[in-house]
Length: 301
Image (cartoon, rainbow, N blue to C red; front, side, top):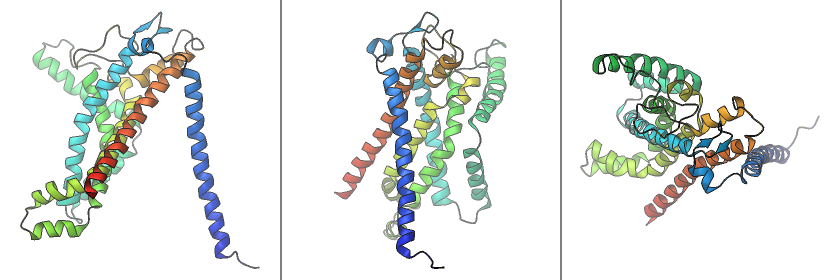
């Protein structure tokens, strides 16, 4: 029996990979078409700036937009610096044979595959029942201020969720910087920290930004962790303190599609809210692409 030639295998590989790409494009296009066609007519300035009305069957999603933005901002401030510092240590300071570094990498990889609902249960037990309870006992005479779901605990829980993504992406970006550039810097008399600050981090900045913003994009759309730690069904006002609950776009979609008084009547609101969430995450991705383009262009000069 004659074996297939090299050209035959090349054609099979081309067909399989092209089919995979077309399948992904079809799925993405279908999601966009269904979401845009279902929510475009509802999307308006009033929808973006008003509070929900009449049992959330009318009105807008303003508090959910504000809550999502605040949670994403606090999550970013907590996760990115800690994740970047950890990645710099693993890539630049830790020995390849270090048991401590191997333990950290194992922990990071393990956290990356933990279901998001587990992070929510951890946030409930650690941040609310342990830290919040003891803060209330020590400073508020046992009255519940921090020992309840709120914006801060939800944001920190989401920071833990995105931390493995930030660490892995930043470490991989740092490792793309050629070793010769480090050695040249050290040979010129620079210290280890000066080499990291002036050579390694600028050389890997575009990858760091891309990975970081992709991690933030994922965090902005997660729902399960904030179910236990801070998201509210409905609020008549936006949060003014980090110890208050907040509304989230992802949780709002979940509520409208499962617990609304009239699910069919709220379908346009569900599609429009989904469209806003998609636009938010796509905007973050576009920012990453734009920053990467500017940094690469500046580096070539």
